[in-house]
Image (cartoon, rainbow, N blue to C red; front, side):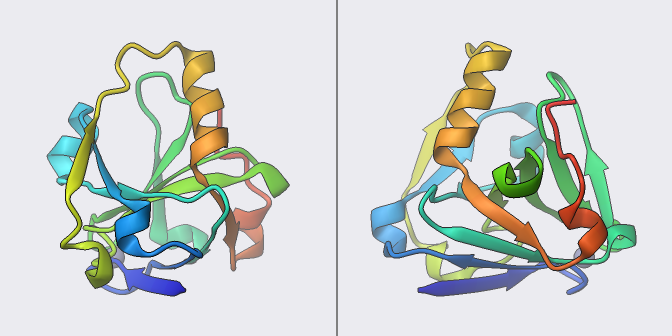
Amino acid sequence: MRYSGQCHCGKVKASFETQKTPAELGVRTCQCVFCRRHGAVNISDPEGQIVIDAAPDDLVRYRFALKTADFLICRQCGVYVAAVMGEGAKTCSTINIIGLRMEDFLDIEEAAMDYDAETTQDRIARRYTKWTPTMFTDAELAASNFGPH
Ligand SMILES: [Zn+2]
């Protein structure tokens, strides 16, 4: 199945391909202050595929705390759409179904996740295991390093 969404203004689009149903996949609410301020609810599938369609100028790449990923925010409408880590073929991400308004996932019961106790190395390892392999339609973004920085 392929699920698509976009930010509020439509400049940032994402599509998510997975063999799992939304119920099988589940949705997660990271309890960090950034995610809660945005009301983010995230999904990922390490066997899936995400394609992010945006121009570099339409994205703010926000880094904070351990600076192990870039949080992508639409420069135009301010919506948080995805957190991305790695570079090249190792690029992976988790997408925010609320920011992208992905209807098929909105009714799934949320699992609250607290990653506060992780070390930097734990965090990076978990993301490479759990996040979704990710591509960008834009060549400059596809060639980027999204962290760890
Ligand atoms: Zn936008």
